[in-house]
Amino acid sequence: MESTTDVIQPISTKQKIEKCIQVLKDKNFGDCQALLEDICDKLDKQFTFDQVTGKLYQDLVITLCKELKASNDHNEISLTLRRLMLSTLRIFSRDRSVAMKFSDETVISMLIQQIGYHTVAEDNVNTPLDSNNELDNSGATTSEEPNHAGISDDQIQVIIEAQKCLCNLIYQNASARAAFQARNGLEGICNHVHQHDKFPYAVKLYDLRLLFLLSALPPLQRSTLLEKYQGLKLIINQILRYISEDAGVKNDNPVDHDQQQDVANAYTRSKIPLSDDCMSLVSESLRILFNITLELQNQTCNEEDLKQIAKLVETVRKYIIHILTDLPVVSVLQKDIVNIFVNIPPKLLSELLILPLNGDEDNNEYEIKETVAFCNRNMIVVQGLLDFLHSRLPNVELLSQQSRDSLKPILTLLCSLSRADSYIRKYLKLKVLPPRKDFTKRPEEGNSLESRLIALLTSPWDIKNLVEDFLFVLCKENADRFIKHTGYGNAAGMLLSRGLLAGNQTVETVNYSSDDTDSDTEEYKEQHDKIDPVTGAIKADNQNIFEGMTEEEIEKEAEHLFTLFKKLNDHGIIRPVDRSGQPINLPDPSIFKKTENEDSDQSDS
Image (cartoon, rainbow, N blue to C red):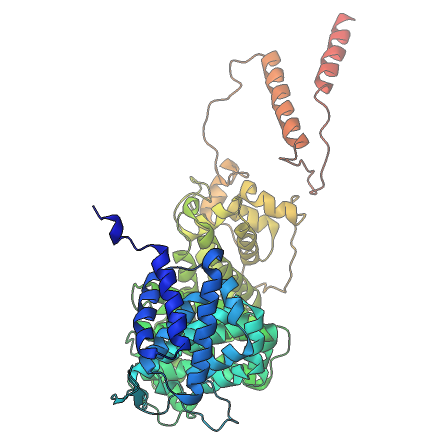
C-alpha cells in the first residue's frame, strides 16, 4: 500500500507553475526545462482546468507565449525547451476557457512562425529554423545531423507541437480563426502543403487536419480555398504525390502531375497494399475535398473542375474494390471515398464508375482488371459500393447510432446513382431486389442484404427514410412493384407518406427506361393465391382463432379490439386513414350499445 507521501498533491504542481513563471521572466531557461517536463507529465491527460487555479494557468500561458514570441526574434531558446513550451501550450489549448486567453493575432502569428507558414510574398519561405545549429540549455551551440531536407528531428518536433496547438485554437474559437485569416494563414498553409515532400508523415498529417478545420468551420475560407488557391487541384495532386511516394517513386518535378497519375495507377494496379500512413494521408485529403466540393453544389462546375473531379475519381475508385488489409484504416479510407462521391454530380460520377468490359491492359485508363459483367459493362466499382453497404449493415437489431449514421452517405449515393444511370439501377435492382422465389419466409427475414434493408422499413430510426427512397427508386417508384418485394405491411409507412396506399400508382421523379420489366417468377405465379399481401409470405395454416366461440363472444371480442384501437387513436399513437391516405375519425365505442339495443327492440317486436 502506497503511503500518503507518495501521492502528488495539487499544491506541488501549483508551486512548480509559479516557479516556472518566475524563471521564465528571469530568463533562467536552464531551470525551466525540468519544471516544464514535470508539468506536462502531470497534465498530459487533462482536458479541463478548474477555475480556482485557472488564473495561474493563464499566467503561465501568457508568459510562455511572450517568451516564444521573443525567441522568434532573437533565437535564444533551445529547440528542446521550445518544444516543451509548445507542448505546455498545446495541453492548455484543450480547455476553451483557457484557450480564449491566448487566441489573439500575436499568439497565432507566433505559432505560424514556429511552423513556417509563409506566404509567397515573404522573403523567408523555408522552415522557421533554417539553421542546423541549436542552443543547449546553457546557451552553448550544438550541432545535430539534419533530416528531411535539412530539417533536424528537434525542429520537426517543434513544428508538430505548434501545429497541434494551432489546431486546438482554430477548433476552439472564432477569434483564433479570424486571427489566422488576418495573417494570411490559409496561403501559408497551402504553400506548406506544396512542400510536403520535404516533411515526414506527422507534419503532413497535421497540415491536412488544420486545413480540414479551416475548410469546415468558416464557410468563407472554404470558398477562398477553392477559388483563390485552387484547393481542388492542390489536394488532388497531393493525393497522387502521397501514393507515388509510397510506391518509392520520387518525382523531382512536383508539377509533373501526369507522371504522378501514371505512377499512382501502376502502383494500385499491381495490388501492392498502401501503407497505413499513406492511407491516413489520403483519407485526410478526401475529408478536405468533401468540404471543398460542398461549394460546387452551389455553382456550375467549370471545365477545369470537371477535369480535376474525373482525375480524383479515377485515382480513388480502385480502393472501393481492393480490400487490401483488415485494418480499420482501410474502412476509414473507403468511408471517406463514399463521402466525397456523394458531393460529385451523379451523372458525371456514374460515367466514371462504369468501366469498359474489356480494357486495354497497357492503357492506364483501365487500371482495374477485375470484372463484373452486366449489359456489356464492367460493374466492379458499383459492386464494391454495394459490398461496402453490406459490410456496414449487420444484424438490424444490433445497429448503433454510429452505425446508422454511417449508412446514410452510402444509401444517399446509391439512390442518386440509380436515378442518374439506368444501367446502375438495373444492376442494383438485380442484386438488392432480385425476383422473389421463396415465399415461405417474410421479405424481412434472413441475412441477405435485401432482408436487412426491408427490415429497416419498419424501424423507429430516421435511416428508414433513405432505405425507402433507395428501394422505391429500384422499383422505378412503382407502388405495386414495391409492395410485391416488401409486403404491404413493410411498405405501408412509405406509401402513407407519399399518398400511395391505394396502390396501382407510380410517381416517377425521373424518366426511367422501359426496357426492363419486373416479370413474375414461376414460383410467384404458382403460389400467388396463397401469399398474404400484408406479410409478403405464404399464409400459415393456423387454426381459426374464432373456432369454438359463440356469435356473442365474437362480437364482444370485436368490441374490445375496437375500444383498444380507439384509445390508441385518442392518444395519438396510431392514425387511421382511408385507402387514399386521408386520416379518418373513429366513432365512439358506444355505437355497439346502440346496435345491441336496436337488435333487441327488433327481436321484441
